[in-house]
Image (cartoon, one colour):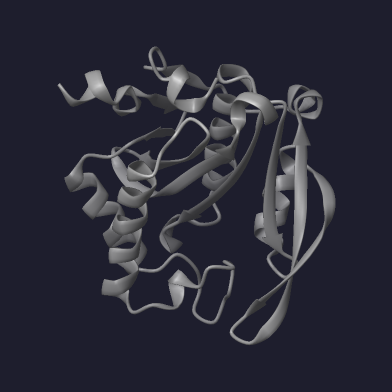
Length: 213
C-alpha cells in the first residue's frame, strides 16, 4: 500500500471543528476548486507570491502543481507539508509548514489560505494552532515563524493571538513596487503560555524520519 512507503498519508491533525491531512486526488481537485472561487476579496494583495492574481483555472492548477511538487521534492533536510483543511467534511483551504535542516534547527515556517466564504469565523486561527501543536508538541520544534504584509491586519492578528512576537521587517518587490512584511516568531515557551484549542494527532508513527525529527 502507498501508506507503507509514504506514512504521511496516514497523518491526521484534528481540532473541535477541523481536520487537517494530505488529500486524495479527488479532494485535491476539490480544494483547487475552492482556490478558483477566491481566497481573498477583489483588490486585496495578501501573498508575496502572486498566485491569486491568476485566472481561476490557472489558480486551481497552481494549487495542484504546488502540492505535487512539494511531495516530489521532499527530503528530511528540506520539506514542506501541505495539509488540506476540512470543515464539516469539505475542504476549505490549506495550512502548510516548511522547514530546512529541522533535525538541527528545530524551526518551522508556516503559510495558509482559506476560501473567502470561510473567512471571519476563527478558522484561520484554529488551523494555525493545530499546525503549531504538530510542530511543537509532536515534532519537538523550538520556534515557529510567519510573515504578513504590514497592511494585512487579519493575518497579523492571528499571529499575535497565538503568542508570536514581532521579529523585524522584510522588504520585497511585488508587481514592481516595494512591499513590507512583518516577520513574527513564536518560541516554545510563548506557545506553552497561550490558550489554544484541543488538538489530537494520529498517524505520526513512521513519519519522524521524513521530518528529520
